[in-house]
Length: 419
Image 1 (cartoon, one colour):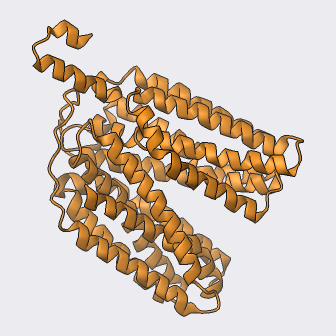
Image 2 (image 1 turned 180 degrees about the vertical axis):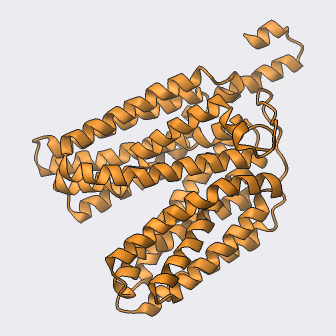
Image 3 (image 1 turned 90 degrees about the horizontal axis):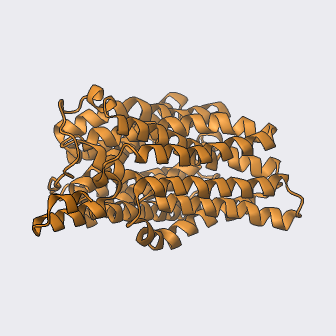
């Protein structure tokens, strides 16, 4: 598990190391223009949407480790060729390879965490993963920003070469991992057909969770770097330094609050924790509304806008030990890779649609933008409570189910266990 967490941190470091500078690199440093740079960012999303439906089947059939190693090699080749590419065609092909490799890493690593954890330790394992991912992203972005020089192509070539080396190092580290297959929770259904999308779609609880996940990612992550930042500039008059402070507040909240929040949510129903996230994010949108539509002065507007990002970070810290373990516990024996890939696909769809909807709305219709996503956040609460009625005790309250099994082994009557 420690090596898997190192892998998560390194993969996040590689992502944060280069992605924030892709637009500048393609449009200005390579002189290929804003249109090509925009296409490169779109290719990342499209590549993920193309490969993720097949990644789940591959993980189920071959295991997560071979799929992860193949994805790392593909991402390394993509990163290296991107640093050397000089034409639009080679840049787009390289970005497709890098985007596809990075997309497959997420469900493969998540499946390895599932295999190395139990229902009782899974929440803490995924909370640690989320903490290290944010730390890796922040560190990668900070170091990458100090290495690049827009007047020197060689500085970007070095940047992408280092990213490729990081992915290859990660492949070496993870090739030594031998993952056991963790015991499944007793209420998980048995797969009728390994790796079957039809079987997955027949799991009503998983379908509801995917709908909930789409709304979660659409209303939060899909707005961070598009709609919400556009709203901050246009409606609240935020400067670039204020935007940077808000993003830093989001990361700081996650880093500081993650394990304190973990102690709180570990003994709560997962569905109610997710419902609580909806309320926290609704409060965040109220703060955003005050920042852009209130009349308290620029200082108060800035404080409210920074608070918006901090509240989003608090909700993210609540989700990390809840959402991914729930996906794992809903998956039948041997199908964790399929379920993780399906949920990653839902996330990518939300991240593609979110900016396309939120960006134009935030830039021109400030009030409706805030109201729309305030309602989406309240919708998260409603959907989570409805999902909770479909979950078993072992899926919604794994700590209670574990305690019940201990009592049962001690010889208590079946009625007391059911109670």
